Length: 372
Image 1 (cartoon, rainbow, N blue to C red):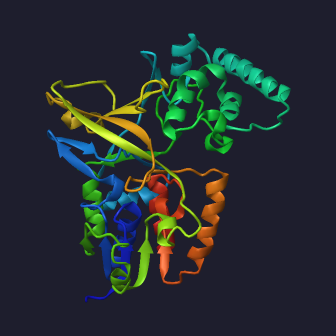
Image 2 (cartoon, rainbow, N blue to C red):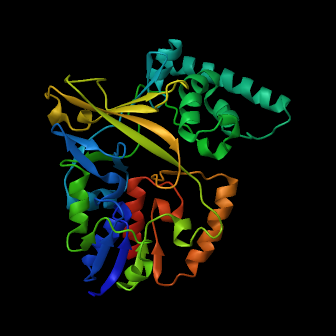
Image 3 (spheres, one colour):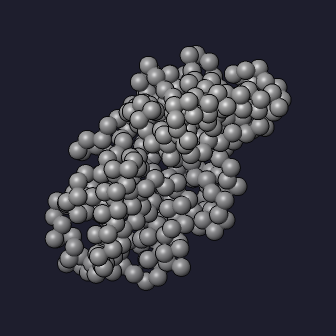
């Protein structure tokens, strides 16, 4: 058996970045993944000559130049500005909430008009909450109403959020939506970050570059033969579900999952935009992704690939996507964090192993800081 400095469980962005930095410091790494491919949720596939994001759209954005320079040193990134749309009852609205949204909803042409309407609706929500004897928002619905008022909440937030989480907004914790981006300018750029883009040749090239120099094995489930894999290396980097590592001895942490359905259409353009959110409660999917809009060079093709994204309850065998960080799960996660501290040869990192949702730039920054 070949011996390694690190066994890295999971080949997603955290594990691949760790492998890259360790390898460049002279360490030997074995990276294993239970899926039949490398890259975790960043995996892309070519369909009809179009690069399709297999597990939902991934747009890299950051204001950290060190992080941006690092990923571009692996593979060049193409600038991409995310400007999603929201569709409610056959009408389209710009996101994030900005003057274009307010014009589409109320006909406002100045920031003063929009601020007046939102403030009036916010005050109405505050008075209602106070009449009920509450001094702080008790759930997501009350929090959203205090932030943006009833019109935006009911048309662009409520249905989408309840589909995403599978629960009424009145039963979701307020902290999920502590902030909502509201701009009183005509600016459809979804992110505020200075650097935004997508790898020129797809995320597979990023993962391949990060894993260069490491040994890899797919279709390798750490838990199918745990004692075998643990003998491979002096240290383990674990990026899988936190509770699973400890045999779920404190209970199962809850997740939301996703289901994707790809369709090839014999037309050059379906929706004119990369992402359109569907905020009606009676539409079962949350958004449609048209992948060719991520890479402009494919615009002339006479075919397009669209993906319907459906939220789903997490069940055994499904992919965990979003941690449900309510009070119960947060307390349970704390018990697992205490167990993780006692594992001296195991480093826990990433969205699944930390039971926290991270943007991609934060993942890279965490690994860079770890090695620094």
